[in-house]
Length: 207
Image (cartoon, rainbow, N blue to C red; front, side):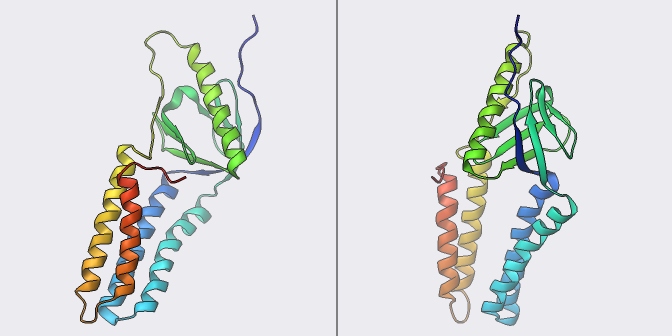
């Protein structure tokens, strides 16, 4: 009897862990705080934009330098094999998502986010992962725990993030209009942010 195996192709990817994931909201929070502080304390409108951008960019850069992301990935019959980090077996995966990137929740250890180089490579990677996981799951005993697919767009995480962005955008608009001289350009920025957050809140996936 010939054993079914997933195709084993090496993929050049970037792998992000908990530290990379925390760096993104930390950067946005830091950038927004610095920008608002610079506007209200020193009335530096354009300077605030530069400082806010700096605050947003620095934490992810530090995370990327401290925890390198480039790696080579092969999907085999039992799981994922990396060149620069330990393997991740299908049995260790508690949940997964393959929308814009491959997101793997693990039973023990931080969630991994795996990003391929381009759109075509991303499709191949996601297809191979689905195939490998499906073939592995066919050999499980009835009633065994299986990794469930989760969705960000339309799921509770995406809607929660959308609601947070909408709330923050409304706060920016209110504070900008409450200034001695209303900052209408910040109102416009808040409006754009609110529109983006509204799309996420509605569960719509950008094309």
